[in-house]
Image (cartoon, rainbow over all chains, first blue to last red; front, side, top):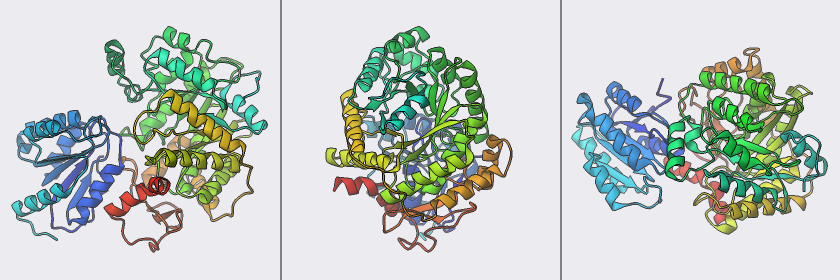
Length: 152
Length: 417
């Protein structure tokens, strides 16, 4: 049991897996990201808060998402995010799954270029520390074209 | 000032203040180090207000990760609360020595779906008041199956009863009036609070409190609190001691000092107008960081002063919250004689459905909205046996990400203006 909300969005568009991190019990950021992606024509499976790495990996294997969106606002997003991407990409079937992370990723509440660089180096395709999503839109479009899917 | 009373049980202290027409105020306060915790409790006790103490636990203890709590204590790393399971009992007893007094009980607040070790620890140091609930500390906070949380809370209540010395009455407060903190229409908050209080009573707890968290509209909140009192009277066995507790707004909090203080004032007025016996406050620092002891004391004193000059108000007009909550409560009670079993069934069938809650055991079909008049409404009730109160979406069409953000910030932006 791990998929309480599945989008009724259009059939075209990307399959996006939205997930909180292992230590983060916040929900509203995940609901926001689900709505945000759905409004742009994508289909969302929302794993909810407090997702252990094993559950994230098994959900990726089951759903084969076009994109994994990690959202964290409890200040542990940097540490938890590094662990999550290493768990997913370590799996042989999932080494190429695009992942992005956003929210408030550090305890100091301010975006940190050094933290962002480390997350990018770990394999994240996008890091949206502080929640600015303009670049996320561009990435969604790029993945969409890359996946050969038609915007809907 | 709470007059000295014979027994210092939590419920008795609150009742004594209520009988004197005084609102009891309480902080949300927790520190990792025993000396800091003691200083916070003493400052709470000596505030110019009728206060009870709070011992809020750290988040490692909440999730049962006692190894991390121990590592933090050893290394001196900051904890966001008091690790009651990890501190030696002798340390905690010394911390509380001379703090606990007639008229000043201390309640343990945590947030755990499995509070068994917390209950063992709190009773070992001479405490007998805590809070939470099998639904309210499970669905909003993680992935623990509801069935397990119900079993854990059943055992925890029974342990608390068994381990409380004769002559004292253990107290448990339901957190059911909060759930996800915001955007839940009041009927469901009231129903869950009543159901959890009944659950505690069913497992032998002699004194309970029923919570309600301040929402978006004062009139709607007054009606909800009135409904909560009515349903508690209808359903709780007469021998079970009870009172109501209001939480100052639990959603996105105003960032400005003026806005934060005004929202706290509004909650104190709400408590006084409805005869709510106890209020748990927020501080001016709430939106930015963990508040200091001084900020907590200032909040307690401000709330107490505002409540003292606010008269009790007549019951507000009935727009249907009582009927809605009563339907939900009676539907659940009709599912099984054992309330824990009934609660698991109710969520399984979607007869209770917390809007926006992503827990695997919540059906997740219910949706709510803030109407143009500022009240919370149901835009979709899922399978719950109640009616949508904003079915056509008079305020909106579909929920969008922008509308969600606006709704989440509705109260903060009103008070920060």
